[in-house]
Image 1 (cartoon, rainbow, N blue to C red):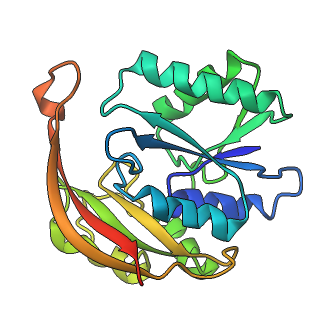
Image 2: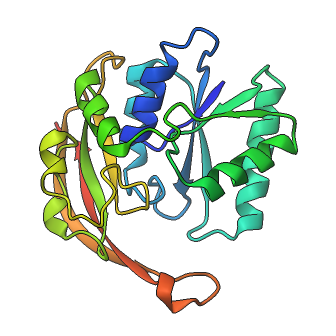
Length: 230
């Protein structure tokens, strides 16, 4: 099995659950990164911090580097090529940390079906407040590193993902940020060989425009830089 690894809490909790499912064994992590910035898409995490997560988990990490705002065809081709290569070494299933976005789930299933692979969603349709509690109970430690400025202010950057956060999130924000309200970085988990000591740095604001020119999808994001503590 290959796990689509975002560097954030949902992927981390999905892996935690998969460890307790004997019918599955995660053999690879798969992450998409920005070709220009060498950072995880939407999370803005440095490639070096991503590498440390895989190292702490003792798993090989496959990186798909794509241009900023790649069109769907570029994305599909890149992912298909990687998955076909994984098939050749015996991988038959891809796992995702998606929770309730039906269209995204269907999209992933359709793409995998074209090459004869299965999809698995360990968190699917679980209450998202409950999932935040499970993250805390599992000992997964993560902080918010990106927020969508339509939903959250930059003061949420650096907040730890725990039950205390639930009390402060606005009513229109999903507890897990499943609609893209925020993204996180996991610096410790029960299956890490050691925590990743990080320091937080500069905050930047970036605006993204929909490829089709639809103004209602123009959105700004605040990103908080993180680096390895030295």
